[in-house]
Image (cartoon, rainbow, N blue to C red; front, side, top):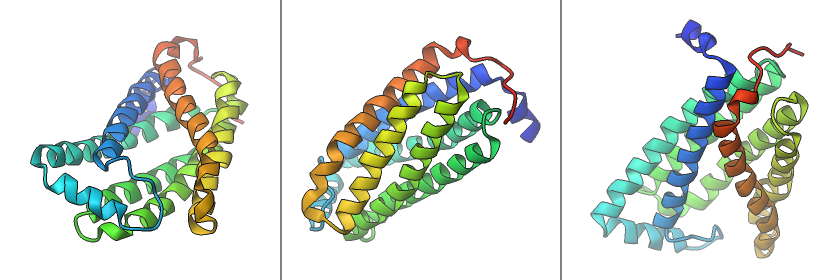
Amino acid sequence: MTNRIADISRRKAARVAGIGLLIIAIAGAYIYYALNAIVIVPGDATAKAFNNIKANELLLCIFIASVLIMFTCNVVVVLALYILLKPVKKESTLLTVVFRLINTIIFTFNMFLLFIEPLLFNFVHMIGIVFYALHILILGYIIFQSGDIPRIFGVLLMIGGALGYLIEVLTYFFFPNYGWLASPGLTVAAITEISLSVWLLLKSAKIPEMNPEN
């Protein structure tokens, strides 16, 4: 298995990552639509939204399928990003892989936790966001250092991670009335992640197969 992963070219890994990230974006958009566009603040909004999901069997089935698709694609994307970025910063790439895997596990667990204790959704979601923010910050740094991918993606990912995801977590736990402060950063992060996935899919031929490891 390890040898097969090692044999995958960086260009193929880039295309796989691009496709996976796009699927994750689509599945994620549906999941949050299914959760009735919940604003993650203390209260029972999540529980009410989940009751609406349970009342619609088709919506529930698509919801579960979307969660499983996101889990699978995240694992694939993690492997693809590792192959793509390992020649740039091996240790940092491994760290961002670990953070994304932790976030993926927490995210998947949290979605099924809705069936047991929906009121814990917001808290667990934010714990997962901490690891995703760290993943995005390090990923942005690696991309900025690589030179194989436009540096602007790296800069914008770091901005989105710091001013979006981290501020979202801080305002949720400490300043719940100021959650809106994270909106600009989250918007930057979302647009950048989708743009990066399209670039990886369409421009993978520009990525050299060999890049000396730092």
